[in-house]
Amino acid sequence: MFVLSVKRDSIALAGAALALSLALAGCTAPSPTQPPSAGPAGAYPGQADGAAAPATTPATTPATTPATTPAARAPAVPGVEGGAASAPVRPSAATAPDASLLPGAPAALPGWRGDNLAGLRGALALQCASRRPPAPWPALCAELPKDEAGLVGWISARFNVRPLTDDAGGTTGLITGYHEPELSGTRVRESASQVPLYRRPPDAVMAARPSRERIETSGLLAGSELVWLDDPVEAFFLQVQGSGRVRLRDGSVMRVGYGGDNGLGYRAIGSVLVARGALPAADVNAGSIKEWLRANPADAPAVMRSNPRYIFFRELPPAPPEAGPPGSLGVPLTPMRSVAVDPKRVPPGALLWLDTTDPLDGSTLQRLVVAQDTGAAIVGTVRADLFWGAGERAARGAGLMKQPGRMWLLEPRP
Picture 1 (tube, rainbow, N blue to C red):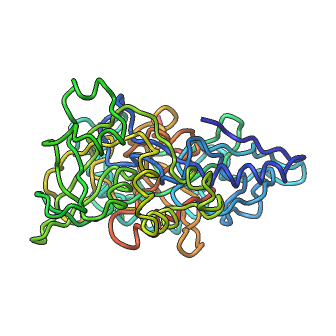
Picture 2 (cartoon, rainbow, N blue to C red):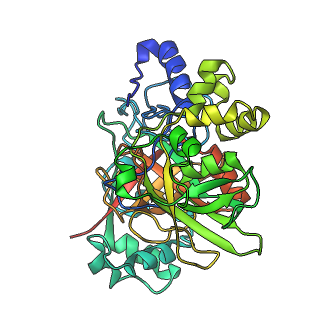
């Protein structure tokens, strides 16, 4: 994993490198040491680990916010995963520090009054109903208001906020998105064009760490098929997301989630396509990769197999259509309220404030979210992956989201 450092006297060079790194940035499925999670199991296949975030403050930043070190903007790359880095933010001598960048009360947060908190109480209630709510939530759950109307006063009275910074002191990081895709398939194979999702094989098979190519071409896992999917390209991308819904022929929905992996490293197939000259780095995203794979069916299998990492799945218990898949806490994820974070930097279950922009229309996106998921390459303090939910809009929003953003941690008052 690498991180770019942007310097004021080398903007042009850093901007070019940043554009390439963002175009190739990505993450892998949850590591074997992490709890099974709905996602993000990996980055979009056009991305390599450890991309630096644009060192620019979101457009929503108040005018009094000190400017970050300038950098050339890289093209937007949907769903970029990886540890974010940004240049440190330093107040100028002539400008008073932004109050939101100082520890204090939630009312100082940018856009605090604009969030109606819809869905937040439900996300917290699901967390409180889990078998082991993360600390300090066992005590907080007993105080949780009965409805959204009481949340503002409770949070204002019960929490202080603290801006999150990266290792260099910067406050701007990378906010990406993921979603729960829906595919079509069957429990029993109907055609030669279908491809399987496999259950996790026995340990004896796993010990050999078979590659994607071996799994797909040798029949090694015959008999371990969980479900057969109609679209090989979407099946590949389902391994990126880590969970999804499969619409069966009778109209019923089968939900599948991360069940393990083969232990091999993730390779971004977008970088393979760039190296081949098939796609320019600036155009690498989920949509362009899918388009290329479908337009080149003879070459697509080899390109997808250039990523040796393979994800296994398990069938999840039936759940209401509106319920999200379980995150790393075992809590169903709530659209636009649950985020994946680096658990080494951000406490699991924590309340966070996001200050970023909506990739669909460029509007401000400032809201309270809950750290209820992880991803093996969601690395860094100012780094979050926002769960968008299921459906077409969620897929578009998550696919386009690669926004600079800031984060605040809400900590219970003593």
